[in-house]
Structures are given as C-alpha cells and as structure tokens.
Image 1 (cartoon, rainbow, N blue to C red):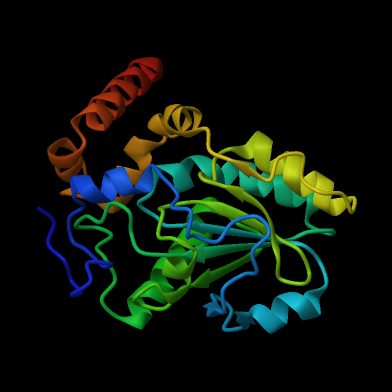
Image 2 (cartoon, rainbow, N blue to C red):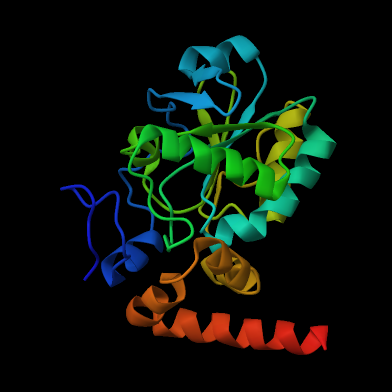
Length: 246
C-alpha cells in the first residue's frame, strides 16, 4: 500500500497498484474534445499568472501538457515538445503544468509546500530545456484533478477555451504534431483523441532509468512492488543502455 500525504491520497509517498491501473484509462466524465477547459489558475516559473481569461486574451490555440520530473512519460516527451515549439511556437502557445511527482524518491520527494512545488517546476523546465512557459499547479493539484490526474497527458485548446484534442500520453509526439500543425493552420485536428498506450509505454521505457535517477532512492523499489512487469522493462532498458556505452 502507498503512504498518502493527504487524506484523499492525491499526494503520496509511494504509488499503489490501483494508481497505476487508474492511469491506464480515461473516465468518460473527464474533460475531452468538445468540452470547455475547467476553471484554473496557475503561476509560471517567471511569476506570471495563467488562467482561463489569459488563454482567451492570448488568442492562439494552446497546447497544455501535464508532467513531472519523475515521470518516465514526461522524460520521453521533453525533446519532442521542444521540437514542436520550434516549428509551431509562433502560431500555438505551449504550456507545461508541473503536477505531483509520479514516482517520488529520496532526491525528488513529493512536494509538501508551495515553494517546493515551484522549485520542482523550475527544475523540470531546466532539465528539459523548455523554451516556453512552465507553471506549477497548486499543492493539492486543483488543475490536474479537474482534467483527470493522469501522470502526463496533453490537451489542445482553442482560443475560446474549448478542448479540440486530447492525447492520453504526452510522448505521442507524432499525433500531437498532427493536431498542433492543424491548429496552426486553422484546421481541426485529424483525430480528436488518441490513446496508444502500448506505444507510449514502449517509448518511455528507455527513458525511465533517467526519470528514476532524478527521483532517487526508493522510486525503482516502489515500481518493483506495484508494477513488476514495468520494472522488468526498465531493468532491461537500463542494461541495454549500459552495454551500448561500453
């Protein structure tokens, strides 16, 4: 069982099997294409405020991406997001929202103060060298939970605040680019939503050792406890990476 830092279990010290299984699906009640963005208010690493009114004032479509330092999916998405911003950053606004740590460890524990959460957002931006806005959700994840607290998903939002595209996983770079390119040219996304969980998991496996190194002691052990198949995949990826370096 995981140890919760909050009564509702949103902030945790150790993940549980139920959390892992919950991440694999999107309930019908969660916001999706055609829905308006839930009300939110977050602060960027530069101290600026982003909320629903700010999205409308900007006038561009916005790609909202949720993620954290210790999330292997986020780790595998960073390079793709930088490339997409290089291509479409003039026409589409990019915003990453730092949420709860997916795999907290000794080096990157679950934040317990707003200051710690902001520090994690700064580290996330620096780690991935993101040249666009990164904001920290509040300590108990008000924005994250309003969208559905999966570890690293992506949403394309039109200037009115309506969701036009949803990717279950933020490392589905090709599908996200198709949606962003369409929005940049004023067209609807070819697909309103993509899941592709197997592809996302396969892609993030080789990046998981880096995410767990960032997390520190405890993250790998917890994964062996709650998701042994995933842990095996990570161990194999780490072994192959070490052999290639020789």
